[in-house]
Length: 245
Figure (cartoon, rainbow, N blue to C red):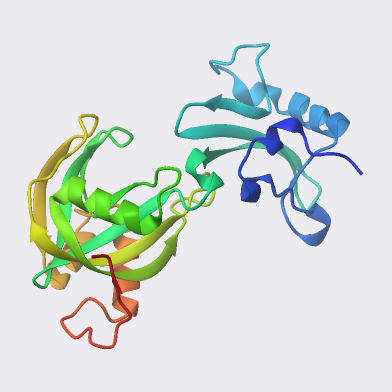
């Protein structure tokens, strides 16, 4: 029996799971000899990489204070082997990466325009944010709503969990519908580019999704989850709520 490669020990517990190809899973190869063979086989896949010709081929390739880019040697149930990347958030050591919040005020959903660097475009989205290490998801909800929208939080309805891109990201975010309280002034971070705050009825939000104005997976996922829980109309008497005040 082989030991896990050293880089796996630096990852959050769930990210260390190696799997077993013999049972139908995608297995992270931990034998140094076999891992080297796989790394050598797929070394040319990193052509043009900033890591350079003699750079690292597997393990933690890059990291900053927020995330790690990891490349694993893999074995598949059918016998194939390859190297594959995944991105792991550093807040995963003690909980979810962050929260996605579907805010509601006086029967309308409250979204905001934000310019996203990755897409190089303006997007219309619900509130979301990274959970800082040591914070609870509910503390993060309050902080993000205050920062991005300027509102206090009156009630919270847990909706579930979303994995935004399970092919690449290990991340999962907890999702909530929030009933907003008193309106104040937003306090956006200097490193974010926000536009207008937009108020939409459930019907208008649906239309924005269908016409392609809303493309954000968190917004669409949260709206669907809220619909399935019966929280998108005014009749929410039987819904389970948690006070944040």
